[in-house]
Length: 222
Image: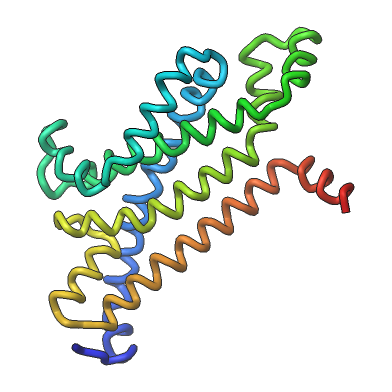
């Protein structure tokens, strides 16, 4: 195996690595964003109506257990895309993230104290305003925790797309395997891990920034 570490392969392929990293981020983060946007109203509906929760949460659990590779191979048959199409990776990832986030969003909204929502209703908050002004802000720490899991897992699952010829850092891993190049594989894997850690740290910091009351509460308990 070629263990030309890390020179001269790395400086010769900086552009390729940068392009693969950009493709990987696009493939991974767009489904996470879509999953977040879709899961919040679904989680709200599940937390508001028990009948909806009885159907939606188990369904999300079933969808989450479906292997991503199986979904990736089925998507072209279901929506008519070409074999090498970013949607073949992004659609299964979006389904996976919606399934994950619906459950965490539902739990987050159910955890909002009933007396808080009752007080908001008593002072005249309509359901939509109460949700946006009271319930959603209080649920943000749990929602962000679920989002962190979704984003980090998306970074690794996106690499599976390389098995059907979709780019990203997974493509460099398979290319390195074909060329017997350990450097290419190790650098690609390391980049996936580092980017996942950076995204996780960013979401953690963002969650703390938009929920200053949680910091104040933690400071008061020390």
